[in-house]
Amino acid sequence: MIKINWSVEEAVALFYFYFNGLTSKNDLKKLSAAYKKRAVMLGIQTDDKFRNINGLSMQLGCITYIVTDGKHGFSSASKLFYETYHLYKTSPEVFSRIF
Image 1 (cartoon, rainbow, N blue to C red):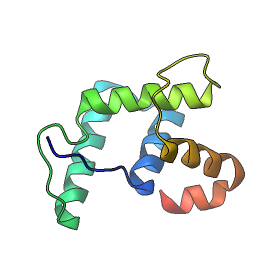
Image 2: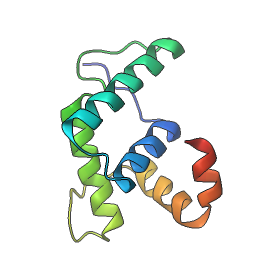
Image 3: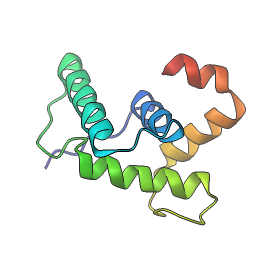
């Protein structure tokens, strides 16, 4: 398995999907394909597990945890996701430009 850290751009995109209710399997399939295409364009070597639907669902659970102040979701959110949410709350114009 190849471990590839999330970029801020990827995190912002996932938060965008979350905030806009784009969390169906079909939505996540499209996002997964976009992440994979981006990786190819950047020359990043990936494997079958890279940003797959199950992983994206788990990360959405982490975002839920952050947004609900720990009332729901998964507590294993990364520092990047906390920072991305902070960016969304404090500098929405910057957040929007990244997406």
